[in-house]
Length: 178
Image (cartoon, rainbow, N blue to C red; front, top):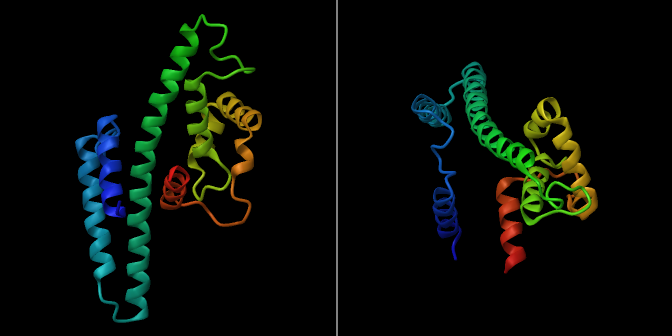
């Protein structure tokens, strides 16, 4: 399967489970993101005639990339809040002795804490989710760390200084199933 078909297949799966490109964005945010992408492309295609113009283009490009990053992070935080709200609701409604017991984990808890751990790992280049959880849900971050220790997945982090990219993580995950 080629990378292009893998990408389109992944996009289809995301759309099926409700995490398509437009989720957690309102119409205005989508329009702004589209404008930012167009501006980024124009800036990258701008011929540089001198150092002054080059530094101006670099500064403008940095501003565009920062705005795109903010919009994307806000989308991710919106999806994260939905996930955490569901967790809190299930925990409050739970009468099971097995659910939310720190000694044993259900399949759903393994998936939930693995997802949180993957998004808060120290090896990530941008730790905004970890910082957000530290500020807003410190107990959840502590439970995630305990899960990582108990399950042994904290030992699977890259030990070198190389930062993990989304492409690299997906590639390595796919390779593990082949």
